[in-house]
Image (cartoon, rainbow, N blue to C red; front, side, top):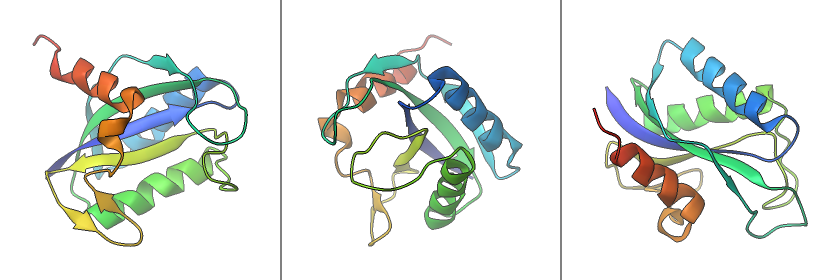
Length: 136
């Protein structure tokens, strides 16, 4: 089983409901388990056309899927929740990014691990710190 971190963001529709439904779809998979969740942060969009603020979080997961299989599963969940890919950085109902997957280093046309812009994004770093600073 691999441990990973998924960046979660939404800025269209009922953002809290989008996050809840995403969690339910991930939990419904027998091959992905959410181990921990950061707090939810409201953030301003970076790049793209004018659009509303995001709700962002990071989820720590455990999975038996390979990284490419996990990517396909996450993209399938995005489609189920109405994500339509148009222009780069467009508004979206849900955005799921694999930030890290078991410390793997991978570079392919479909997936780069760890996420190449993770360290430039406060909307990723702040939730990651939140998970790391939780008391058990």
